[in-house]
Image (tube, rainbow, N blue to C red):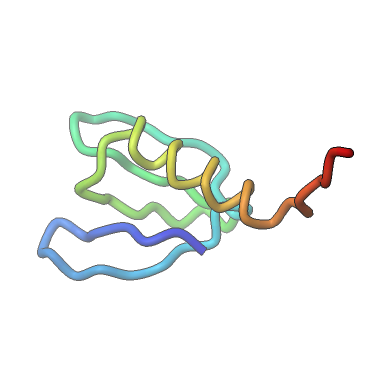
Amino acid sequence: MIKVTRLDGTEYYINPHQIECMEIRPDTALVMLSGKTYIVREEADDVLQRIDAYRNRLRPHVVQE
C-alpha cells in the first residue's frame, strides 16, 4: 500500500496494483480498476516514486557473491 493525501489533508493508503491510470487535471486523479477515482494532493511523479518504492520492498533481495 502507498500513502496518499486527499485534498482535505486526510492521509490514507491505496493499493497501487489497483490503479488503472493517473490523470493530471490539474490535480492528480488516480483512476482505479473498479472505476472509482481518487483525487490526491501528490504530484504524479511523487505517486510513481511511491509505487516504485513499494514494489522494491516486495522484491526479494538478491545476494551477490
